[in-house]
Amino acid sequence: MTTKKLLASATLAVGMATGAFADGHEPTTVGFVYVGPVGDGGWTYEHDQGRLAVEEHFGDAVETVFVESVPEGADAERVMTQMALQGADLIFTTSFGYMDQTIAVAEKFPDVKFEHATGYKRADNVSTYSARFYEGRAVQGHIAGHMTESNIIGYIASFPIPEVIRGINAAYIHAAEVNPDVEFKIVWAYTWFDPAKEAEAATVLIEQGADVILQHTDSTAPQAAAQEAGNVVTFGQASDMAEFGPFPRVSSIIDNWAPYYIARTQAVIDGTWESTDTWDGIAPGMVEIGEITDAVPAEVKASAEAMIEAMRNGEYHPFTGPLNKQDGSVWLADGEVADDGTLAGMDFYVEGLTSEIPQ
Image (cartoon, rainbow, N blue to C red; front, side, top):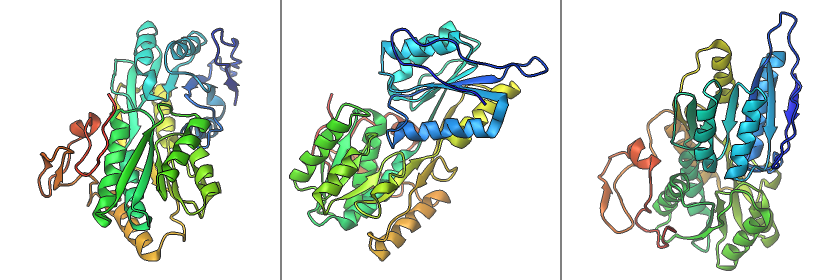
């Protein structure tokens, strides 16, 4: 197995080492473009765990390459182009902000297959994939609503895109369901990964009275800030972040990309790859819930586990009416379940959230 880490710069390192098999066949080359460092402890770490699973599964039949800490924009397009020029057969671009660059590069390399994480633009050689993170947010909100003593829950948000807004809504709905007095304070960090900004956001929220911190950013800095503050509950984001357990980190959302990456690589090898859109959650295993620690009261842990099981077997959907929009207008009638189209494009808060979505 050969792995090559390319350098993310204006002039990329060249010369991927690829060894031909005895029968003359070249290994399939699979590239990964990462928005953060592989050691971020969250989002990029879990994508890289998926890459390593591809290596382990396929052995010498596959070579992987990756570039970490690639800014969303022109740099991303250069990195993708470099990978394609150097012979990548399949390229996973793992951040929402890579969407337009993925489409642009794919148009130039019609024989290369591209997979874009969390986006919505597809082409004959571009698939999209994401996970139903909002299922995990519902569990976190349920626990948070029970555990807050100040009734103030802080939320560190990255960018005001539907994925992030869905998560805020799901967490709030389930926190307010068990604690009608709960209030959400939201800080927009405008970054996926910036430990200093994330730590500052956590500190601001704690100073405003939040004793639970949720995050949709990628580093463990909010966990460290909460640990230093003392009696503040946190949840791992994208990865288990178990080093901060059993407290302040009392559970987590874990993104399990490995089965998807293996399946899509196999499809390229088999010649059966087609452009698709995948949006999986707890039931197929793309979203996992990390251990709920004993810092959570036993009855709360039991009810959270029951919710997880109900989502796994299809008995419960986190967006089930009656639910109103923030302005009080009816969104979902009693028992009505949100459709995927509305969720995919969600650009509104639910009733009870008091802040405004940045434009």
